[in-house]
Image (tube, rainbow, N blue to C red):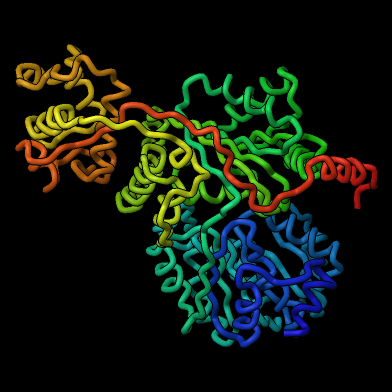
Length: 537
């Protein structure tokens, strides 16, 4: 592997491999089909870029995003590597130039979108058959799976690739795929006896905090004022929210720009460039921002709205702390956001896909409401064992006072039973509080447990219900309307045979979790100011 190490140093400027890159590259060079699951910022691209420079022919890279292609190709060209991309942003003359370079075997890497390969009358596929292709790299491979968080129908056609190019090795790469999605990727791409490499999902230097959304703008500005020298990304779900938030933060004196698909390509590129060069501190963005953006010193990622799934949340928070220094991921959580997202989870004329999206949303909601270590929940979701108590998430940094909540639990469980296990959390809370509204069925208002918990606030009741779910005294059905049901454990509580301890109050510890890679902040600031004096490359 001396040659690969030499390329790593001379072309990419790194002194050593990390996160299993070397073994993955060995597999690819041995012309074996390879599946790579590596966290955001782990260096997936090098796993096919280095082999591309060793193989004689072309490495075809299939990527779903135009911005990602451009960033990757620009970076390769800066390193003196013959790379191009083909997408809708190019003029016809530029496309003809690139096709000619392909026919003359002048390119080492070509980035294309999946729809390009099978578009029109199949001319592009016929062109590929005339070229010596040494490797096919399928990036964001989770897009081929119905179980994935970002399924794209055009990726399904890639299943024919192994039939068309049976002797060309394929490397499929993704940063986020649970066990079901991984299996689906391998089957749909028809990989032959694939070598599988799964890196740990644990980003130790990222500290996770999930907080109620109340007064989120005030708390956001307080946080930003305490981190004025840091770079960060703030995610919102809509373009309008991104635009409005960026405008408000700008008026309040913060160095900020928006980024979303509603901006022109020139505006997006300018704002991204300003952020990467530290000429602005903050980007307020939709999920359109981030893929392939190589900025190592992002100190915080803040979600103003709940992401649609844990895969997206993990991928977005993973854009913080790529340099290994302590960074923070903050999510402002609201059940209202979950209710809104349920509408967006519906896939027209596809109940199966809708059910998958709703289940992913439910698990995202559970992450926000769980009282177990956030890191443990995330890692367990991706099939990785973790004992818990990371001492770097809001749950692990909080002292919890418990009390005997058996009576409260009995009232909640009894209400679920008397409502015949047909309703969700919202209805149950209103029923327990005795809300005399049109929402509550008239026949339910005469039930013994109607209004039995009117002395408990709506917020606390919700919390207790989710605690009972966490402790397996209740379960929630999957689907558009998650219905509460009793479990085997419920019976012992209802009979008074088992005591239930609920959380009375919480208090955040002031202890500071360790920084994974210490650094001298003052020196770092001086070096950044010196770097800013150099002209752009």
